[in-house]
Image (cartoon, rainbow over all chains, first blue to last red; front, side, top):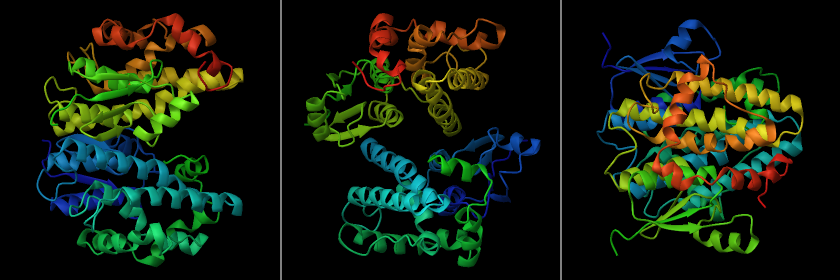
Length: 235
Length: 225
């Protein structure tokens, strides 16, 4: 019998996975957590996630995957507060547009700066990431502390998961979001985000995060994620 | 002024813009069509003031701009809730989004690869991948159909249809055709129904115009004449 209690299949170290995990935690939904290695391409895994992607939510006998699609699904299946998308159609489009911006114009460069092995490529990725972050900050509404102003949303989760491990990019590549001019807002924003109980629950210890990213930074990772990042694609 | 008429910024040849155009037509929304040629420098500069990203489609409504074709479709569906293009149920909505994402990530790039790649080998790789991914998609379709989720024409159909309408370009320049054998039966049944819809007839340019406008792409040069 298909269960009403969802199962989250995800990898502890994946910021994409944290998006789904945080969304469930924020909603106070009871769920089963299944630690998953999506690179273990077993037949059992494909039965759970037909395209082999993590995070994947199994709920009522069905699978939902792609981290952004998971966030929207969680908001619609459990429409309690906090709403991850607001009510108004334009505000919803705004959250989607800027989540899409995070996915297309920031995240690939975060991966890029780590995975690329030459200084020139790394510097370009760092600059492109900063340009993407600057645009996001400019689109942030007044009144704070969240992207939409007073209300927390999917747009905060989209960037805030990766943003919470920028120390890792600093460690390996000297990447820093400046603390001045158009970037000033970033620091207050990320501090507020990371202080949320859900972030505190999912964030692994610093040393584990650094260790997890090391093969990518040193150019020895063979995963699809590394290959995709080298091509400038988000996995 | 509340509920003012939306403006849809569209380029007549652009398949991404056609996605949003289909949603507007299917829902019978009264909108103002605004033609944009993003390859004309002076038009581009003017258009950047309306949509800073400079891309089509864009929907301008009540002083706001919405862009990205899938986001436009969802905005149109939520702003004008009659004749929905997405279902109500959260899982079925996620399913539409998953397969829309599949189209954008796995099918559309192969369409462009077939046009833009200059080596026969690269084009063959793209052709095989395109056909394979079409089957993956049609395996996910409602068995009866004819549309993706059954008898209702919806978002996934709109995300794919403009590209299939441009297969005539692939046929002309690359000799590409979707075969008629069993493997593609569900696809062919889907397309036979989709191409007859009024919204498709209204928003799809004639074959000759499409073939002509894409000749730059076929020569490896992604601009429009």
